[in-house]
Length: 270
Image (cartoon, rainbow, N blue to C red; front, side, top):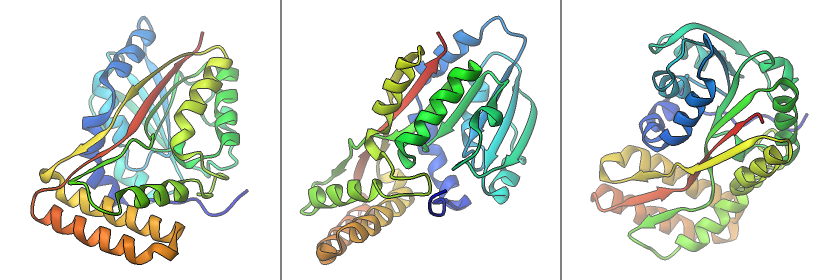
């Protein structure tokens, strides 16, 4: 087992949910629905489920009756998920588990689909290998969304953008509880591993495109980026402080936009 798992509070998850909902690939969701066609129902296990935003997004887009199991290390987040069960979900179970060293085949084995959102970029290659092996062993499809891919663009362009981006990418590679994180390389690595295991793999961009109407999310995102950059490259701390201050002024003036690159992945058993 490695260090403590990096966790996210309910307020952050609530703030990002509309951006996540706008970004997820509808095409991959349609592909998953077509693959599930002909079954009487579907069983889905969501890893790192938080407050259940993936379930609220996907459930209305599947034409089958669904049983969901939400798995997270924080029962307080799962309690919130129980309060907002969308149409199409006939049964909901929640399970508190530490995913770092859990037997993944036991966690979702017997189900049709395993899902995870904003998780792949936090984990190591070894953990992804375990996930792929568990999916291959159990014949489970994987719907893995909103993994960062490094294609970020801030507007208006400012001095410090490039340095902050480089430092943030360095921070993404640190151990966040699952071993050294793959960060922006996670999706391409997972796609290769799933293909090697005989899965049909589809990917699609799922970028956040945040404008003036997303000022609160932009501010929190910027604070996180600046803190990560300063932690990874403290020698340039003043540069990142100045960069963040100027960006906050642009957000306050309604002039700021940002694209945060994400990619969704769907892996279907052959």
